[in-house]
Length: 303
Image (cartoon, rainbow, N blue to C red; front, side):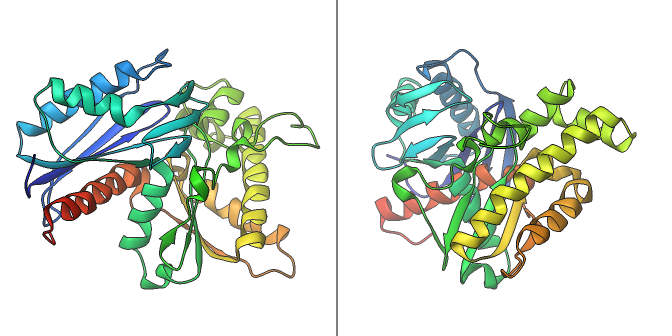
């Protein structure tokens, strides 16, 4: 088993895998981004990629622990992804698959496993204003899909793995009736509906005044605002942290989103809407936090 050493945080996304290798004192040794394997319903190829990334990390520093986080409905206790729509996973034992591949590469260290958005929320709350550790805070990364995490008094709410799946709610009325929220309000949805190769390309079209791209963008803002307004009303959220790839557009997304959320919350406390401090690296950072915590538990040493 590994002792105190560097930890590798691995964030498995719908389109890409992000890693961050850090020392016990928080020094970042390496960051890597590779594509997420497609057509991989059993996650065997994903496990092989993670093991190879870990093997590469060991050439930079001795590994003490690894944290892997994944999207969808994640059961941290069993180490499974019960459902991940964008990856085509259902009841996949991701933790066991990754562990087996790591052992095949001769890597035997503690392996933490969790949910990408809940891990990202943990990273954002710990790095932010102390006020984020009190009351209700929502972390919403707008990426390939859409999910959220609720943090109450510094504790991330799991709901047995089901909390925060706002992107899977089916829209019942209006022009998008029948679609899931994330089909409209996500980076993936914006790219697909605008016909652009990526959400970044769609954002550039919006900035250039393309009317079709602007209509898709406005739809995204409106549907996302609906979801955030309900989250705020139900949980009493005082701060919404928006992350993921789409948040990198800055005011183009956040300014109209703030206005739309405010418009929907007449008579209800309006939350502060802020960009994520870590951008789209929050999941990998959170995975590293989970790995470090597991290492402390298994070694009995506060690192």
